[in-house]
Length: 279
Ligand code: BEZ
Ligand code: FE
Image (cartoon, rainbow, N blue to C red; front, side):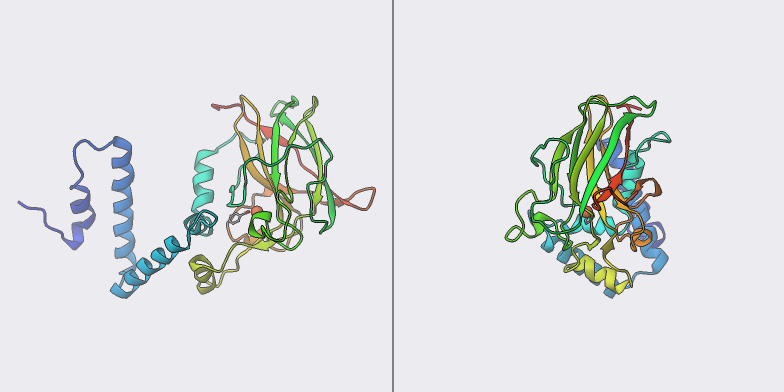
């Protein structure tokens, strides 16, 4: 008997069309996707108008993308999907530094500086000394670890968002840990900022009664041969958006101290605990 489309068995009818030579993983992923997509439409009794709106929304999301703007990743971020995929793929032993979203503003190739260098090139903001150590779970220092850092300027924008007004590499740099695993650099006390919200994702957030703000943070990408790369941020303690980050990136273990240092500049201390590769 021909298995024509039928509402009650819709997902089975679609999945039965799959060919015999599909890779097992693709078959697993697509079968589940169709199952959940159809279950969702049935659950909410999706109307024709709503389906049309969704197609329009996804079309606008695609049209918003170019070499500098990735609206689909932003959509994934605000739906919590980016954090979920990150969590599934970076389960680490207790005590190891947790990952969080990379975000769209990392730029490879930032200058490497000597310890203590100030990465703030536009003279704005409150100076902050970032210090800490990279070590193993057992407490052994990791020398030569590469620490790539980036954050927004005091106005809440990354250099790549304002190429005409901010110096290139403003608030970015690479540092390599000393023999005792320590690092230190100067920058600014990070400020909170809204994710780009002038596109369909921003409109969706507004329709859902959600704000677009991220709590103040410094991005860190820490790598060393033989260890899992850590993609994370440290968050400024006490920030008003810590409990409602637009992209769900906050984890309690990533909230770092922010204290007045001896010279009245700020001081933020955070140690990175690396996990061996393959664990
Ligand atoms: C960021 O922290 O740079 C970021 C992360 C996700 C979406 C937008 C910005
Ligand atoms: Fe950021």
